[in-house]
Every structure is written in structure tokens, then in C-alpha cells.
Length: 235
Image (cartoon, rainbow, N blue to C red; front, side, top):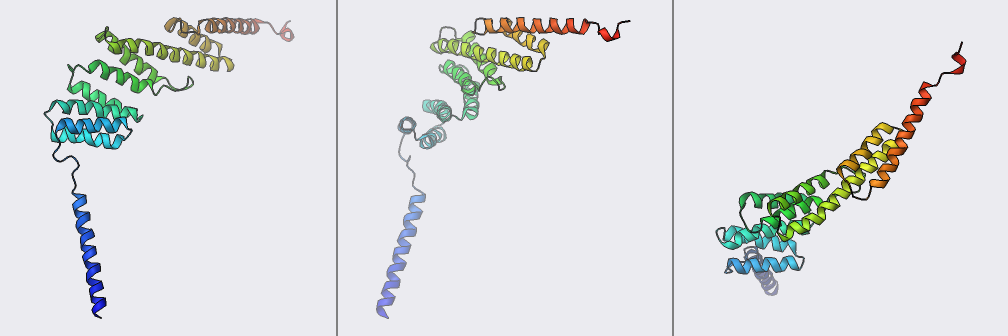
């Protein structure tokens, strides 16, 4: 009986110890005693290692604990970068857009605008899909070039604009081909003409000209066919 009583006491003591340890661990603060720079560096290191959740937690702590430090602004930017790296492009765009709105004269604005463009650029799909991201990416890149023409990110944007235009041109040609297969030659020709006018020198010029010629031939044949008199109706 005495042995059983001692065993119960030992179990109770162990349970109490486990509860205490759990309570202590739940209140453990890994950032306690660290300054803004230390937390910031830890977040950047975590991001480089691919631990993006830990990185985001560190950046958020910088913002919460040291909102008036120079590292708080950098933390905002790094949080947006973390979202971008994770391919969460819509959320990343919102974060970059908020950064630009809150810090319009910050030295990182050229980079921010470039990243906003890249959020759309990374979502450009195949040519048979809706091309809104190509248009939006092009608009952001053009805005960057107009505002900061000599910036290194403007040079990168110029290269990406061409890719956007190629995607848009290919989409027009693809739609034109769709109408052509449906024998809607006027609609098809309008698409080919639009591609030539708005996206010249993008590699589709000769293809568009060839199909414009085909459309005109088919329309001519159709018109001539409709003007033929049915011999059975001649008097």
C-alpha cells in the first residue's frame, strides 16, 4: 500500500513538472532581449535558408517591437519579398503596393515597382488564355522606365516589356487562327491587322501577313460565290 502511494506521488510530480514545462515553453519568447538589427538579420537568414514562415515571423516582430526604427521599413519590404519568393504573387503585389503608397520617396521604390511588374509577369499564362497579366506587367514596367529611366531595374524592365509584347502578339495571332478555322474571315483578319499594327517586330509579322492574304482570298471567293446566278433560275 505504501509502495502504491509513493508511485502515485511520483506520477503526480512528473505530471506537474510536465505541465510547468509546457506552460513555460508556451510563453517562450525567442526574440526577447534582441534588438531590431539582430531580429532583422535572423529573418533574412531564415529567408535565405528557405524558412519563409520563420522569416516572416521575424520581420513582423521587427515591425511590432521597433516600429520607429530604420529596420521596420526594411522589414515591410522583406515581408513582400518573402511572399514573392513563395509565388504568392497577388499578396506580394498588395504588399509592394502598400510599401510604395506608404514610402513614395524611399530609395527602394524602383525595385518595388519592378517587383510589382514581376508579380504580374510571373502569372503570364499560355497564349490561349486571357492576357490581363501581360498588360498589367507592361504598364508597371513602363511606369518604372518613365520615372527612373537610368535605374538598373529600368534596364531589366525593358527586357521584360518585350516578352510581354510577344505574349500579347501571340495571343492576337492565336485568336485570329481560331476565327480563321471557324471561317469567320473578317474577324480573323481584324486580329491579324491589330497584331501587325500594335505589336510590330515581335516575330509574328510574316505569319500575320500570310493569313491576312488568305482571309482576303476567302472573302473574295465568298463574295464572288454569292454573286453567281443560279442556272436553274435563269429564264
